[in-house]
Amino acid sequence: MAITTQGAFMTDLESVQVADGFSVSVPQLKDALFSEIHFIYHEVFVERDYLKHGIRLSDSARIVDIGANVGMFSLFVMQECPGARILAFEPIPAIHQALLENLDSHGAKDVQVVRAALGRRPEERVRFTYYPGLPGNSTRYPEQKKLNKELIAEQMGHEAVDRIMGGVEVEAEVRRLSDELRDWAPEGPIDLLKIDVEGAELEVMEGLDTSDWQRVRQCVIEVQDLDGRLDAVLGVLDAQGFTVTTESAVNIPEVLRASMVYATRERAQ
Image (cartoon, rainbow, N blue to C red):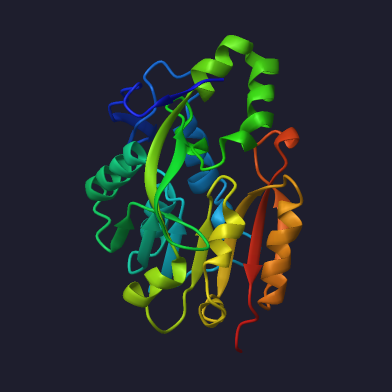
């Protein structure tokens, strides 16, 4: 499948009502075959996927939202914990713009947004693939979307693959998480790392120094288990002293091998 250059697709932000009295801006193509934002809303707000298996947040929690997308998780946190502070990362320009608009329209004041990805080392210009028909699948590693394309072809036909997974190349900066924490929260606990980065989970984790890992109290990580990635993620968490629970991702076809990983530390009594 051809990947076009940035600008070949024009995706204006569109307001979508996902629940009574609750709308968000999304960059998805108007004639998209699948309403991704409704799926994400259900996952975050209805299923409450990020508050399972012992994950708890206080009103003063400090949270890092890595792969913030259009902001659904950050908005959920601000609804549940209005006093929380969030550091959010989103590298894709169109998605980043929707994120800013959603945080502003919903009055989410204490969210610092960075238009960058995270990785094991800083990089000034890195190519990402943005999918206007399925923005939440945008990735640094488009070759890992083979299973997604096969599933779409099987269920909807080959023409649908081009409409849904037609990619646009964009460029973004990559930063290290520990470098970013020095400015945002140089000391004290990090109550939650939420990581949903479409194949770059290990790179994100490798960009966190051991001293900063010791400050992290909880993690929730979405992992597609390709090439032993799930075991590798679990190995990092185990080495850092976390108690880990995994479950298959809700409402995602089993063939895609998607898991949610929940990591906690023993709390002081």
